[in-house]
Length: 234
Image (cartoon, rainbow, N blue to C red):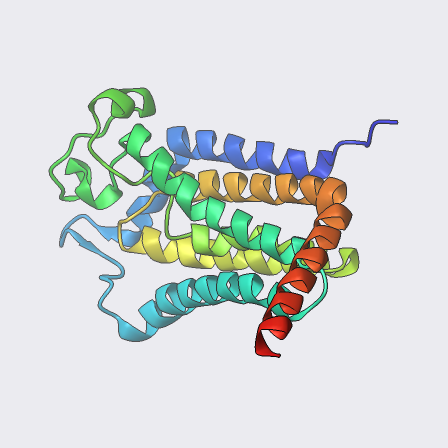
């Protein structure tokens, strides 16, 4: 019997990507102008504000890295560990995939466009893929926020809804920091949101199929190395 698809989850990804397209066409520039002064040619946030940068940049990124490290170490000291290892791997997929996609899209950051005091013309996404030199689409900074969707597999089903809301808020909190300093359009962040949630869905599907077998394999592997270490000592 085939397992039913996670239609709400797939729907969220579709809505995210549709929101990205709609924003790219109609919303990006009107929203961006709320954070850019045409007269002074300055952004609402310069990036030099240490307290804002601490909460919107350094702390989330440090937490993201620390979580991956913790998830890779935890299985060494407990039974099983497939869920933690899969989560760590898919957490890395979000920033890595965004970095790779950026190479091919060639989309400029708002701050680099002529209309915002930069030096590059504004191009369509298709034109950017052939002529663009930018590295701004999808949003990279928010991958440390939205990328945490993968960690929802570590929560019980009852707590996932709260986790989903918290991660969505964190991702957009980090995203608007970048928007306010001219480093991203809202469409860039929405693309990363949909991509990151897609990795959660893939991780969740794989765990349903492989977690039990994976835990048995890891336990045998850890048992083997414990025996080897113990025998060498004595």
